[in-house]
Length: 294
Length: 293
Image (cartoon, rainbow over all chains, first blue to last red; front, side, top):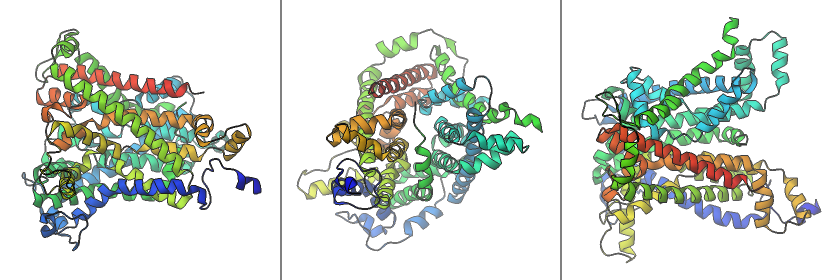
């Protein structure tokens, strides 16, 4: 114990506060506050009444918070007659379906690459690792042509399938499944379980943290996406909230009156991401521990 | 029943998507880059003319897009990566409760994916005296007239860099934080017995080698997210092309030629250049980090 007290180097994951941690707090707290400012700003802006939005000089904090901006936003109907609720419903639908499919698809593939035996297993994993460097935005044009060829233009599938193909997610689940002991699978096989049963009954519960992480990544990818609505969807009633919010911002964001609504819109898009992450952050950290590239 | 237990059934869903939205698009981009294609008529072959024209005729590309992209990537990538590591390293050395709260704060800007909150940045950098930055600067007496932040060429790029750095503590940051937290404490104690004397030596001889896999993962994520963030300039300034091409990045150039001018063959050639750039930068980073053993 006395040796530990004299040790002056890095102490990883300390149990309690010690004066030697002071310099870190002195840097981290002001830095985090600075990082938080834009988010605090949007929260304040979203709840400001018209009079405060117009105030000069502008004030950072809201004094008399109201929900005016939100109610104005929800009663707004797009120029083509599609109500706010329709965009919201579309977004919720494609996000829920997309997250479930992303988990199922990447999980199945990750299990096969980790535990099943077949030829070309190594090649597929290498290919996926190479695809970590893939930048989807670079191939917008061929992707558009493929979506068109597959007849997916104006379908909900166009919001989902291109977005849930996430090499990072597959990589993370695979690395996580690698940690589960083979004996577990072997003994289940002796008990007569099939591979699919093993996957759903044994692997899925064990790798829950990785699944939560993939869920969160898929959620962010789909919920925030505006490109699918812009490029693949012409039918306004099938576009998503993210698209509507961003088009609203370019239409209204430049007027002072629209600023409050734009901030409210930004907050509505941002909050679900944050809440989900706060709930699942310990699982995400657990998964990230196995994220290393060798 | 036994049939669905073959590996192929596990693989089909994911790898069908992978083929349709990663492999085929990359191959198609390579093919189209050698053609003239306007999305209406069938593509016609023109060899490497697109690439030659990119270098010799496309003044915008050579003068603005390429230098802008390199500048943006070479600042945002390394600075964002260094910041992620530094913050993760500090966070690992404070107790769990404050660490979790601070990590959530630092990570949360990356949740906005840059573009989602561009409305907010527009308000902050608004060009009249009512804009927040402008009104502060006027109040402090730094400037007399409001600055047209988002529509003037000399300010757009620095603002793009700041906004992207703000949201750069993403998945790579979390991976590095997890990596540091999992380093065995005894490694540090042993290193001090072996003659490591200060924190700087400690970082190079213990921390980085012990978490190298996460460092590599973080590096690849940094490169990819830097290029993926390319549409920020258009989102901020509200126009493609950006004012005087000041914030024009390679991603905007692709959208400009592909979806505005419908010169999809040429745009594909630019895409191929982008994919190669990302690949080379990732590999170079990999090499640099890999040699530190």
